[in-house]
Image (tube, rainbow, N blue to C red; front, side, top):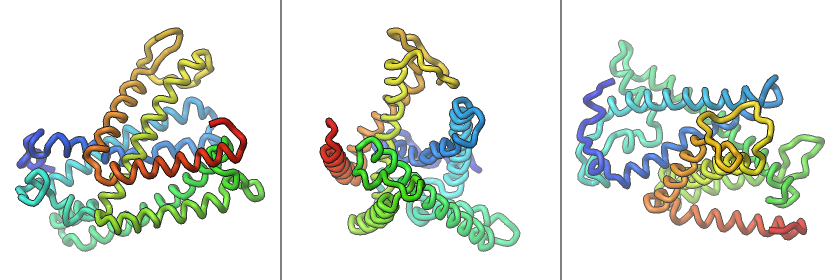
Length: 296
């Protein structure tokens, strides 16, 4: 860790520019996706109404601390250096040489300081990262299946996704759809030519919409059902029109929506592929509602 390296060649607003900062903030939200999977264990907890929200807050705090710590070490290992070819005139090896494996890059820098050299440490971190990614893939597949099943139950997807076999919630249709969509996006990123950056920008586009919608839903529920029993209440709430509105959700919704708008101006992938993705989703939604005989 080096405090000097954190500010080397840095002039906030210029290097990096404000547009680059907006881009970075929207991409940083990707670090917090997956925290909601703790609610998958609600059925196994004695008091899910209290335990689940507290677990989410603790998980969020832990992720923030770890991400900040790892980022500070990473920037210390690979500080920004002048680079005329970079967008803001400066660049770091973390965004170049180690773009696809930043933690391996950090391990390489730390390993150089260890008695045995970097090879063993880099190998260990590389294998550990691969195992983590495999776990993430499995979790994402399961999450996609559950989401498709839930949406189909409310006629937001065709009913084929809501017909479990032998009582299991995942359906072959949901599994097949996830297995097709994921590699299709990878192929698309290769065709576009921006690889990991394209996928990150497209994913952050969707994540920011989801985060904004989730916080808006909490606020709406407080207004529509103010007397609903709530084992856990978001702190820092204010009373408005007979309902207690949670300020963290209001602030969070405004910020994530602002970042989403910023992503449209700073992410090429989000600006083009994001709206296309929304149009396709809207088309599937309209088809599902019409075939189910439901109102839009």
